[in-house]
Structures are given as structure tokens and as C-alpha cells.
Length: 105
Image 1: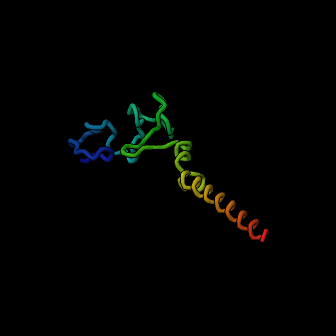
Image 2: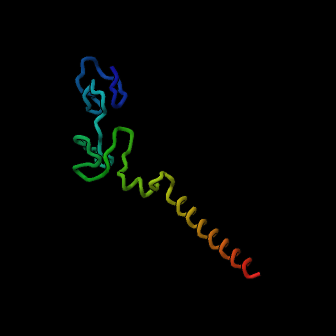
Image 3: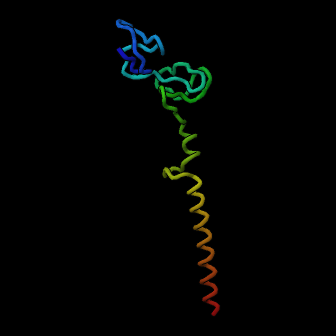
């Protein structure tokens, strides 16, 4: 028998994994804290013991605020949005100078 949580071989007739402690036969891995390893109760995204983000075994979880710091609302990286906005301003200024210069001729 193989534990579906950690993938380790188990002795026959074992109710709990001897390596990770998870119940054999559970279909959903129990979410764990990324920092202290405590079990996350319910559908919480953060640890009730230390306050760190929860994670399923092998996968880190980000809070919505953390993911928005890295990407904007449109899913594009924030640095790329800022670069595009800056270039848009530069192009607008250059076109204004060009139009005003042509008007003076």
C-alpha cells in the first residue's frame, strides 16, 4: 500500500501513514502551514498557530494581496504595466510637441 499524501510504501493494514501521519484512504491531502507545519483547519488560507500562508503538501498558497503585488488586476506583471504607462506618456508628449511644432510652421 502507498500513502497518497507522501508516496511512501506502507505496511499492510495500516490506518495512518508511518511517515507523514495522514490517514490512509483520505482523498484530499490535509493543508499544512508553510512555516510551522501545523494542520490548517477547515478551508483556511492562513495558519491559526503562526499566521503564515497555508499550503497543501508540495504547493505554497499566496494570499490575494501577495498575488496582486506581483500582478495587476489584468494578470500582467505590475512592472510591465508601469513600463507601458510610462511609454504611453512619453509618446503622448512627443506627439504633442510634433503637432505644436507643425502648427508653428
